[in-house]
Length: 356
Image (cartoon, rainbow, N blue to C red; front, side):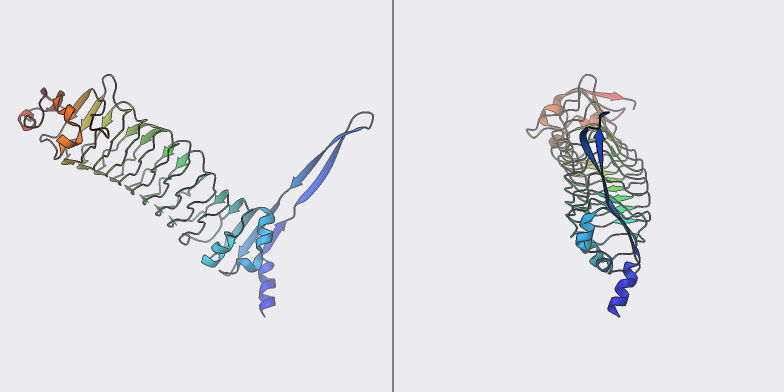
């Protein structure tokens, strides 16, 4: 009975056999000048009708002999573990796989270079592709959540990282220590970026624009993303976590803290020494309640290099003395009309009232 079952399963596999041809190159006199070998690699298509049976349809040796494998049907944890045994397989097409998520660590440490994700994928599980050899990431427009450490420490990945508009939550360490060397594009529906989500992505480039619906940026979310060149925060943002942008030294020009932001954590912009320059401004929104220690200075406590500091909140935020650096307390600041008196106990420099 077991043998009959195995035969039924194998009937659901189709293999395109590898072919090799040798072409001789000759001149007009018939003298052989050389040869070219043309090799067509093997491509295998497998339909898994019964979960847990992938290993009965193809062996590890056969997987390793294939240039690419396409799998349809359904898989379970046993099947994913089996796929990780194929250390020579480079491309895995799961686009027509009938799943909405993967098991935890489904492709953790995998040698695969290209994985085409299922069209109906809704969530990418924790550590699903962590420490794998994938070279690029294309996330389907159906995904709403990216799990904890889902792609962390993918050291071969290159190019842009595009988060589709469907994604609402990126959990902690999701892309930490990845080697993308292009732009980061965040989807329009994103509401939350978890702690360390993009920390140590030191090759990301371009200007970082936060999407309209984002409310929270977690601790160390973009720590040491030092090649990012600009930062635009969105109007619906409420909270910026501890050390969120620590050592993002590539940020240039102005920094505008939106009006709905209430708290900025410790060291949020510490060592962001690229900010500033002639005419540069740091503008604090109307709702700021508290600023964490060293959030707007260097490790040594020196203020960041803004020429002008505007406080649209009528009362100075809690912790402001330790947040912006002692020297900055002597600089000229700009506050709303009628609020000058509230700042005199903190700032020793000129306090000018303006109509924001």
